[in-house]
Image (tube, rainbow, N blue to C red):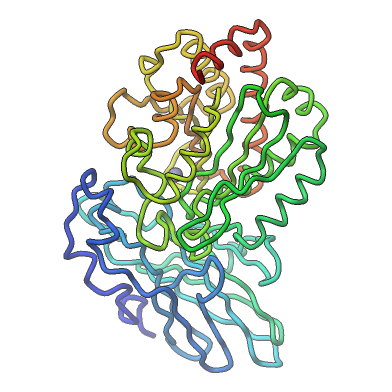
Length: 442
Ligand SMILES: [Zn+2]
């Protein structure tokens, strides 16, 4: 038996030869690094495997032996030097596998771990691929975990042993992606369930996909925004949709939100999701950064501009950007608290400190991170620029850690929504906050 490493070298050598400084490289990554192949497929021995599906990701798929294949991830167009420094997260393998035989069989699948992840000057990054793998039926969005007994860590790969019925097809993935094609249907169902909900097409992605928001409550009231990260490898749509569903139907939340307009942004990078990228859109742009330029009306990434311009129409009183990833090396979940010195409006600063406390109480205190004013990377992010530009009470909530899961992220999303409404709503009863909101907007 060959080891995984002998089977193939995952992505070729082109990434390693490019050196890009983390900060000045943001705007030019897509042009400096060759784009990897978009998909891979293999048909052999009555098995057919393909990453040419929605959310699919594989750089190469090869036969290892009888009923035994190997899959290597396709990397985003981000140089390894940037990948090991940040701000990337996640790593995606997603493939449809079909047993074309009329008998039940088992297939061994080795997921190859790129060599740079196994160790280097910045440490190991193989945890991105060493986590519980997920399966779903092609026509369903319901993921189930591969049984622990069917998944084993090997030095240079993760080995999965999967059972298939006759002519059965399954999608195998490292992350519980939420397909773009299911989003509109889901939003329509939520909108139907509430008398005061409306869907808005806030723009079109570079490849022509709709960018949706769901708005709940009367126009003109102070706005609270709950946005998914634009990192497709962190499928936060699950949490944002759970929040929207709860806000539309849960009587307690309906009462709590009476004085506000809620805005839900479940998928700000639909192209990245559709193509199964981890951190970018298909042009290699990390659209979750670039908000400093957007706020200064400068040139920025397309989807970044759409999100910023939409929010700028009616600057929010509060905003939470939700990130979600199940990672064993991230200890706990919690908010990033940005230096309150950035607020020029003292009422908003006080409100921000109250919400920081409430989000911290909801989380593990060890998960709370402080972000210094002027931080070079953080200045690029939406919550930071929302504070600087609009005095929005803004947080990034990092729902990462070994205990996160799809269900846990949905639940945490609803908890965040509730805590935000309770904290802001309480402060808003004296009208000062609403006045401050109007002052900032005008
Ligand atoms: Zn993230």
